[in-house]
Image (cartoon, rainbow, N blue to C red; front, side, top):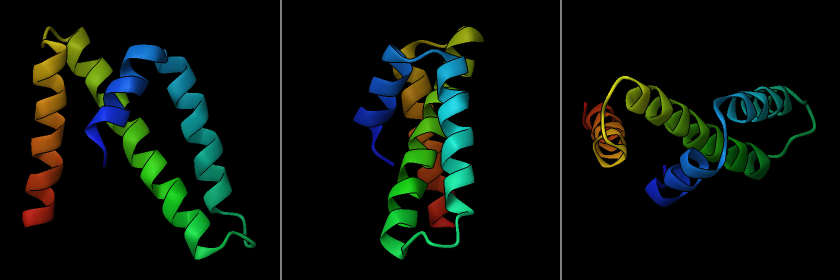
Length: 82
């Protein structure tokens, strides 16, 4: 997870574009010929796209962009600590 990437995706892409990209990446991960490195990169992109989608949702619910980004980061870090 990279917060600057999530911010970039949030600021420059619509929810629809992010959802389409997510579908493509998820489909790619099911390809039998994908290497471990390919899957690691796709997984990182999927995480960042999901983060941007969550930020879009939080901002639509009334949070500021900064609070939404920080909230997502805390959520991820909290899940890692468990």
